[in-house]
Length: 177
Image (cartoon, rainbow, N blue to C red; front, top):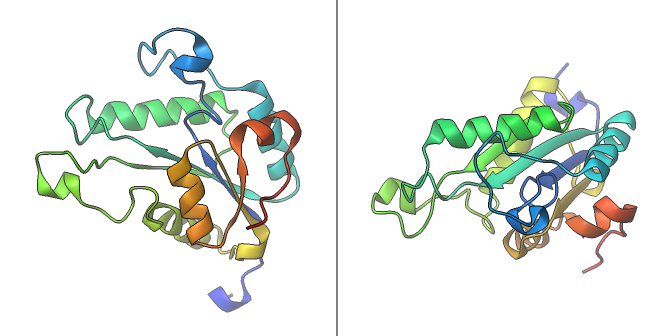
């Protein structure tokens, strides 16, 4: 089977912070570390529905603390894997951008994956495609996020997108731009 004959499958891109994982504002207290992670039950149910309909799910996250020296790469990855586990392992892939424009090291200050740039989303879709031998047409894809940068990336890619709170609460309605 060649990439041109791979089956078309729906793809969901879901922002980890605030859509899957509760933020300190949602918790009503400071976040204490990777094992102090709570996920929204309604988000897990939405993921189950998407997966049950045959779709794939990519979780994505900005982890600027890595570039700023506030945390290390291992802790950032462990945090995202904990989110994946607490979301019933429904994510096919979890990706992150460890960069920040204020980083002192040039290789940590500039990248193509920091939202609203589309590199992280494109690379994630490509990786899942190669693993699963499927393709994910834009018209069958959806991005769910709270952050303006993620929603801007979706708009720039002409990708249907929803506000994370609306998606968790009631499935929302696809944004029409």
